[in-house]
Image 1 (cartoon, rainbow, N blue to C red):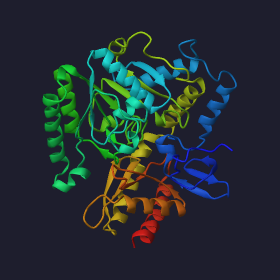
Image 2 (tube, rainbow, N blue to C red):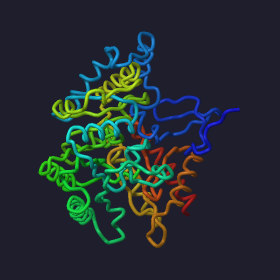
Image 3 (cartoon, rainbow, N blue to C red):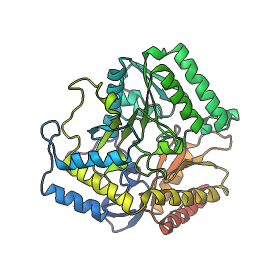
Image 4 (cartoon, helix red, strand yellow):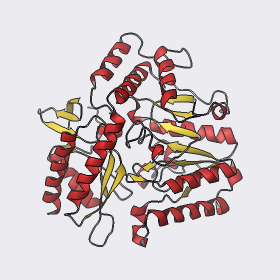
Length: 420
């Protein structure tokens, strides 16, 4: 009998039969409050009626039309709709299926557009699991270990992560000073600017702990990119489509990318991703370098169009901001009663709780124990952080005030049970 790989470890014990909004139901009929959203994918909740209807209608007319063979209306419509929400100047699109593919596409584009080999990434970033994407990833060795050699031409520079630099007594401003100085050192000693194609950065570290960057750090990246003809690539795979309380995570910082990656929340669970750039930059991609069998699948495009409708019609970006403030304030209040909880990070509905031991070291064991107990209590969560020391909350953007309160009640009960 065939079985799944033993390395596919479930974060929760739930065998789901169906979902509705922020709830999942298992095969025993139990209801679970889902604050994972498929790792930020089901942005409009499980099985939103408008998304379901759009997908069902599309399945009955055209399931797949390979987009370098034929063109289909959902793709044309989605391209036009994304033009309404993408940052100014990013008016040329390439579609794929996953965040990893978006990273690979961005990498290929910036190298071809500049004729330069190197990419500077930032410590704690996550950009995917395929070979090139994993080579760009530094949020944990599990994503890149065991299949070396990895792709060359990648240089790592610090991210202004106050969680990491707390041990040195630094705040976010001091961490920013250090990160920018070290970036200058990287350009002086490891990757000559004339060899550097791009900086690649997340507005908020995802797997790295839900750590937002700083406005001054991103301004420093933009300044150095402009000075040296380096392209700035912003990975909005997890932060996009309202997740942070703004439509794009970069909006919190005034960040202006040359290339932007997107995926996850765009289609409420259907696989679609892409990159956006100016027509001038995208035209520098080499002929035949962009394509793929399943990219911009017609059903996924239809679901994405419906998702964009729901986000706008139901005010989900504003809801993300309001519910995020409520969630973060509640987590901070509850955490004050437990010495192991040392910080709450994030923006909008992208929030993590950080745990440390009595010596101040990252405590992945405590985070894992709390995460497990929360699932037993009916609240599904995930962990993150470079030491697995954070428990993250990432509910669908449709979550209500009452549902956030329910989650906080379960969380308080869970911490009391595990931490005392």
